[in-house]
Image (tube, rainbow, N blue to C red; front, side):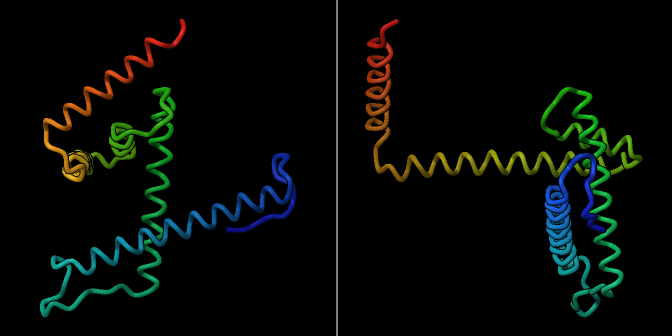
Length: 166
């Protein structure tokens, strides 16, 4: 990325350099993330050679693949962002990504994306349940003791609410 030190759209040179530096850092993170994914895919059993050897990319090929992946993610994110803005949403949701894929001509990817999103959502719910269950178990209290403590908290909160002057 070329970094220009002259003023850009009224920004000072320092601000513009800071923005450019932030973009370079973001590009490095994107590249590192894609590199990690490539390494995981290449080391998976379905990609290994006949004798179990892990496949590798030539450096130029790997760099080209990373550049293409980052460009695809950038293009998809940009399209999804525009769709979210049209819907007057401040957060890009799964439906914005699926619509962006369709509009960019990648509708074939939508079913797999939805399946992975559902898997992720279900794993998050399961993890949340596990954390809640663990907190209850870690309390060392019986169900009766927990109910009694909850009732005391409700009573205390009710007293505080009712004692506040209106």
